Every structure is written in C-alpha cells, then in structure tokens.
Amino acid sequence: MPRVEPGHDGPERMTSTSLPARLSSAAPVSAAATSQDFTPRYWLFSLPAVLVIAAVIVFPWLFTLYMSTQDWKIGGGAEFVGLGNFAELAQDARFLESIWHTVYFTVLAVVLPIVFGTAAALVFHREFPARGLLRTVFVMPMMATPVAVALVWTMMFHPQLGVLNYLLSLVGIPPQGWVYDPGTVIPTLVMVEVWHWTPLVMLIVLGGLAGLPREPYESALIDGANDWHMFRHITLPLVWPFVMVAIVIRTIDALKAFDTIFVITQGGPGTASETLNIFLYLQAFQFYKIGYASAVVVIFFVIIIMLSLLLLYARQKSKWNT
Amino acid sequence: MNRTLKKLGFWASVFVLVSPAVLVFLWMISLSLKNELDNTAFPPVFIPDPPTLKNYVDVFAQNDFGLYLWNSILVTGGAVLLGLIVGVPAGYGIARGKAHKFAILILVARMTPALSYLIPLFLLFQITGLVGTITALVITHLVITIPIIVWIMIGYFENVPMELEDASRIDGATSWQAFRHVALPLAKPGIVVGGILAFIFSWNNFIFSVVLGGKASRTLPSAVYNSLTFEQISWGPLAAAALLVTLPVLLVTVIAQRQIVAGLSAGGLKDG
Image 1 (cartoon, one colour):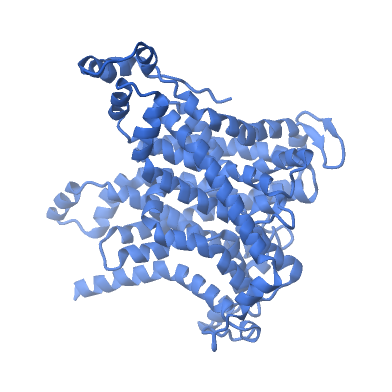
Image 2 (image 1 turned 45 degrees about the vertical axis):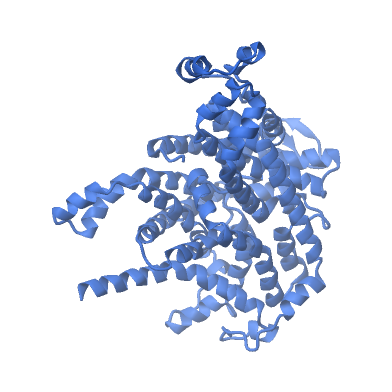
C-alpha cells in the first residue's frame, strides 16, 4: 500500500518561512488556526485518489499476483498451484518464442525512433519559417488514434492492391509480403511503431535542447569547430540525459506495444508477430487461462518496475521535471 | 554556394521528416473520398475524381456510428472529469506533502501495460454484472486518466510558490481554502494540459472496450475495428470511419499544440 507522508517537511517549513512570516504579520490569528496551520494534512487531498487507485490499480495488481498462483480457467474452478504457472511458462515454446519476438521488436522500435527522433529534434531546434506548423504536423502521428491509423496501414500493406507495393514497383523493387510474410512482419510492424512514436522522442530531446547554454558554442566557433564537432562534443553530451530518458520511455512503450500489432496482424501470420503482450491477451481472452495469463502479467510487471526505476534515475539526472 | 547547398539540405531534411506523417494522413483522406472502384484499382488512384462523400454517409447510415460516438464521449468525458476531480487535489497533496513514494506508485501505474489491469477488472465486472456497461468502461478508463493527471499536476503545483498559501493561512484560511482559492487558480494551465492529455489517451484507448464493451457500449476505436472483422466492410467507408474516429484528437492537437508539447515534456509518457 502507498504510504503518504503527511507534513514530512513540516518542521523545516515552520522555521524557514511560516514562523517569521507569522511573527511579522499584523493580522490576528485564531487559536485554532495556529494549532493546525503548520502541519497541514496534505494527505487528505490525496485521499480520494488513494481510494480510487487502491480500487482500480493496486487491487488488480494484488489480485493478479494471487491469480498467478492458481490454475484458473474462466468457467472452470481454481486450484492452487504455487509457482506451477511459472514453471509451465518456462517450458512453453510459444511463450519463449513470444519473448524473442518482443526483444526483436523492442530493440528495433527503440533504436530507430531514438536516432530519427534526435535528428528531428536537432532540425526543429533551429529557427525556420513555418516551424510551428511543421512541428505540429510532425507530432500528429503520436496523437492519432492507433487503431484508426493501423487500419489504414493494413490497407497500404495489401499485397495486390496496396499502395506501398505500387510505390516500390515505381522504383523497380519487387512487391513485398509486408505483414503477410513471417520474415518481414516484425520489421514492418516496427515501421508503423517508428511512424507513431518518433515524435515523442523528438519532443523529449527538443525539451533538452531548449535548455542548452550558448557559451560553449560561441567559444567552439571561435576555435573553428565545424557542425559535426559541435554536435559530437557539445550537444550530444549535454543532451544525453534527455536521450536516456527517451530510451527508457521508448523501451517501456515498445514492450507494451499492442494496439497496432493486434489490429494489423493479431500475432500472425501463424505466431510470427506474437509478442509478449499479444500472447498474454490470447491466453487470457481467447483461451481463458486466467491463472496462466496472470503469471505472464507478473513477469511483465517486474520488468516494467525495473525500467520505471531506471527512468526515475534518468529523470533525476536530467532534472527534467518542469 | 556552400550556404545555399546547406540551406537546401536543411529543407530536404525537413521534407523527409514531415512527409511520412503527411502521406499517411493524405492517403487516409484519399481512400475516404473515393468510390469502391477507385479504391480497389491497380495502379492505385491517388486523387479522388470526382471526390464523393458517399463513404461518410454510409458510415452513419449502415452502422450505429452515432451510438458509438456517444459512447466514446460518455466514457472519455466521464473518465476525464472524474480523473480531474480526484487527480488535481491529489497532485496538490503529493506536491505539498512531498509524498515521493506515492508519486513513484503513480509512475509505475502509468508504466504498467493497460492489458495487465484487464484480467482482474474483467473478473470483477463479471461478478458485479457490469461487463458490457458504460460504467465499467468509465471505471476502467480511470486507470488511464488518473495517473496522467496526477503526474502532471504534481509538476505544476511544485512550481506554485508556497509563500502565497502560507500567507493566506496566516490570514485564517483553512488548508482547503488555501488550495481552492490560491493554489488552484495558479495551476490552471496544468489542469488544461492534464485534461487534454487524459482526453487524448482515453479517447484513443482500444483494448478496454474490446474486452469490456458490449455491442451497445463499445467506444469508437473498438467499434471501427469490429466493423472490419465482422462485416467485411469495404475500404472507403472504413477509411472514412477511421478518419472520423481520430479527427477529434487531431483537432485538439492542432488547437492545443503548445499545451500538449509542454505537458509531454513534463509528463513525457504515453498511455498503455
């Protein structure tokens, strides 16, 4: 359970700001106010949220943990199996394959948006005509409803009628199988993911670039440094904490990728694009193996918590909170 | 000479960056404005000639698009409103009380895949008979809206100077009054940003409605997805429907782009 710390810094505040302020204040202060004012019960403000979060977020977590130890099928009974589900997962070829798909997808879906997004941030950091408008256009994919966009991509990937194969034919490249070919399905889905989420990386890195000092560049110019040198030795080191934040966020998001994969391939052809998340969905809502799926959630959750802690660490280094 | 070349290269890179977004959306529009014959033609017809609005008419005539639109408005509206009511004071409480552990919990909640909430909530709603109701969807969407709103509000309240509240309390205001009349008005931009982002992520959410939505309570994204698989709808109406689904968030993005950029560099996280 979350522990809220009321008035954690009460004493310091009393000595540093409130007390001198109060002493110098001419306004009469009621006895009741003095006894309460210096330890405001801030946790009361969070109480409604704590209750709701306990119900819709923390309870599901704990319940999932419980279910992961059960052999539980919808419609059937539940039976305690301890770590049996985890042992079964370790033997499940389909699960292990889905981990491999997830790693393959995640690596590509992190590296490419980071590279393109950082490049885009460098471009949008410069002043140029219509920058605001073009930046809005660039950011649009990440706001667009993933399902809606995924449907259009599906039409574009159509092997016979799709516009992508037509465009390739114009430059003499033979038609591709896109998401219909087990060999190209994951890179193709990565392409959609890159299209969707490169803007987020751009925004994070752009935020970092906005805070860069001017002096190092001025002295570097005097020393006759060229653009590449300035990027490599000044910009990149300074903005690196922000890139780190983007890398962690991208990793978490790529691990969670679901909507577009589900809409475009549903894990197919066969199981060629079945990632951890799709595997989890199918186990739970196709095969109704609730306990088994919950064990997958628990594994997922451990990975996410570790990455979240890494993110907190990266954030602290970038002092990135407004 | 070198300067012109550099400038040309710069604009070329701008072009390369922006064109994927432009092309996909243009193709979406093109598909939605063409008749079925042109949509399945090969080589593809790029510019609708003549453009037709028949697909849009079909979307409304042949489906319960109006109902799904209403569902989406109810679910997203309800979840954002409740999220603000609960989340804004919580952001204040966490920022002022320096409840770092609670803040970390919020962050982890923000990071956890939406799918992982779905199994326990699905069972819970089954027991309570709420599967297939709007209420169940609103409750589930709180999983999206509360963490993003709280997270953004923490950042904004931390930037509201404490001295003003101290002064008001010395003048006899209760801590609620100090929050309501001093801190809250100052954090208004944060409320706008949090509300907008919560709206976008809740509107775009797909999976909750797929599992928990009934035929009559589906939100737009899952309704459009279902029309693809079960009714074998043709490309034109499907593209038109997809465009209509995403149009509200795109409009909000254009109108409120400054706030969104500010919020995302503060919150920096998308939904799951």
